[in-house]
Amino acid sequence: MDTYLTTVVSNEKIADKIFRIELHGDIVCEMNTPGQFVNIKVNNGYEFLLRRPISICEINKDKNTFVMIYRADGAGTIKISELKSGDLVDVLGPLGKGYDISSLEKGQTALLVGGGIGVPPLYELAKQFRNAGINTIHILGFNNKKDVFYEEKFAELGTTYVATADGSYGEAGFVTNIIEDKNIKYDKYYSCGPLAMLKALTDMDKEKIGYISLEERMACGVGACYACVCEKQDGSISRVCYDGPVYDSKEIAL
Image 1 (cartoon, rainbow, N blue to C red):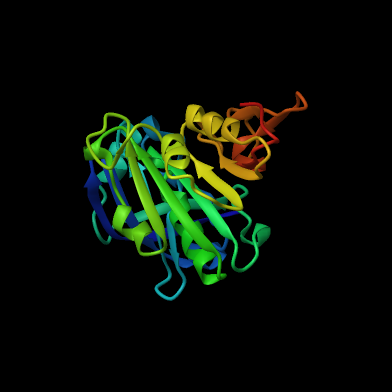
Image 2: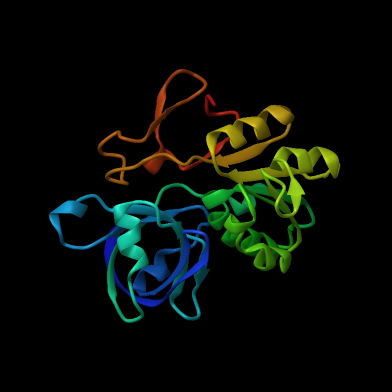
């Protein structure tokens, strides 16, 4: 992986503390796999020595741009939310192992389940599945109405459901409630979100093949510091930033 200097095209708030940033640069030539992420250098100040990992939401090869959606709730991400069109951003990536489009065949159905800030990487996955002739069903989970984003974008690609924990928008409850209540049929599932959601999803049907993306705190982003390790079913450890963040659901001890 390399570092690239990119230019901010736009950076706007789309939900409560949620921002959508679009960057332009040669790094896009290296982006092919949905589910990967990049490490953003906040600035040159000593207070932001560590880069901020943010998942890739959308890749546009024609425009040489890519989109990230992030939550501005820490000093680093709040600083990123202040970036303006034309500002330069130092980006390391693309990083990690993403989702495998070839895991399904044309005509099959993928269930995409996202929770909160775990929703964004599933959008590029849905786009690439559609281009490959694979059907997608999307379930997006949020805490409440003010947190909801990208519902319309996903709806353009396939059937889309929204669940809110407090029932203020869409279906009341959790993403797993929708799967059960709607009796949704699918071949494999692909998910990203909080650990509790991933565990509930994998526990629903242990026979189903699924792929999960873990949200772990990261430091180096390249597997050198072991700050983001998780435990595998065989008792060994795995570096989420390097070996993941996407894993076979039966591979990780949740």
